[in-house]
Image 1 (cartoon, one colour):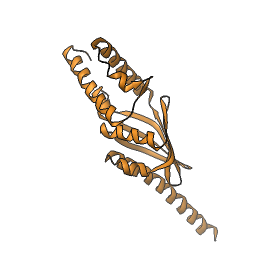
Image 2: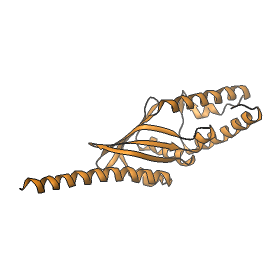
Image 3: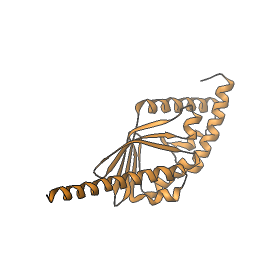
Image 4: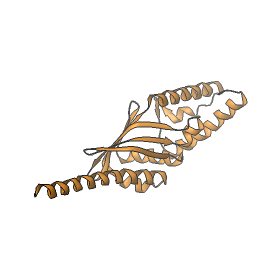
Length: 193
């Protein structure tokens, strides 16, 4: 007879912990979308590491702040769907929109799965797995921008991508938007898709 109440108690504890984990990620989503960088930074563990699978790994709060400032300047919006919890991880599908994607003609990017690993009640790791088709689209757009830059002798892209890596900051986000505006005007004038 005593086993049933204890089982119910432990089930309640597990469900509560899982709800808390999901609540941390939901809070992260809300802070990110409201462009509350300071609030977002409070959710990160001191040893935060963010991996965009197959592209880069950023470690430490300074690098993560640069990403947050980039996202803020580009009006980034995240939507998390289909949460599931496994141990210290919250796994979900992430849909990302921002002004950079919009400027290159991509409505949204999907990262599926996106894995958040929690440590001491804060986010210690984020592993985003972009769906392959979106990586291909971005690669094509960057190739087109490089070709246009070479043709027009606009070297701005060399400040924005160094040694094959994007430089993340609010300043570079603004430079990207300016560059993409010129690129889009050129494409429209010359009927290039």
